[in-house]
Length: 222
Image (tube, rainbow, N blue to C red; front, side, top):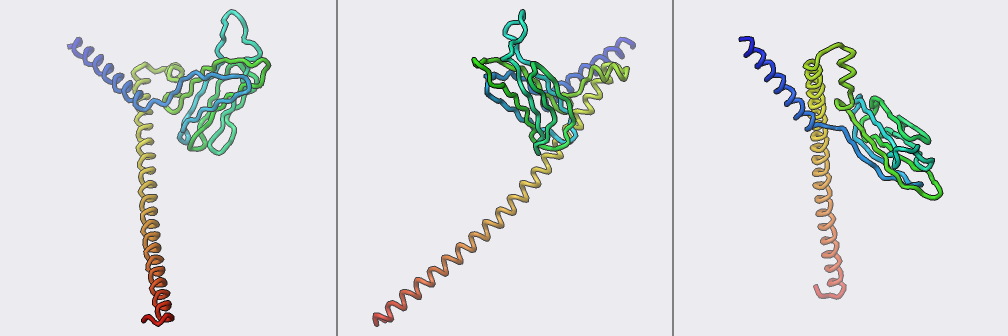
């Protein structure tokens, strides 16, 4: 009896973790990439972040020679701006860094990496990882701070994922409603334009008939 109970618990935990893994893959918002830069150039990355979502970004210049320090030509300037242009993070002449903030605006946040002018020009790469929403939370620290086991952590993950899915569905419904209103407005405008074009056509045709009649009357053909 105890063996069956233990087996049942293990199966439930395995199933729960599988469900969480599949859902996390479906809504995963983390982005890990490597950017190639050259002195005097700028590269920007944008991410659509929802209001009140936590976002975490880490970046570091790739060292071409691990045995040596990074050369002066491999320093970068980094800025993160909100959709309305407010600066969320700014770093100057750095090799690596991290930014953490909660989105106060809904829309595209832009991270720009600037390689200052250097003579002779140098080429290098920057590793960048950007996570938002559920992916941005440090679950290991949450588990240690709250003194909870892994099963409870997985349950919390599942709850956060469920809430994220709910928010996404609500946002999709709002966008669908906006699109429907835009389509209705466009249809009314097109109908009005069609009626106006038809009216103008009739007026022009009437004017042409009147002009033709007047011409024929002057020529005494009618």
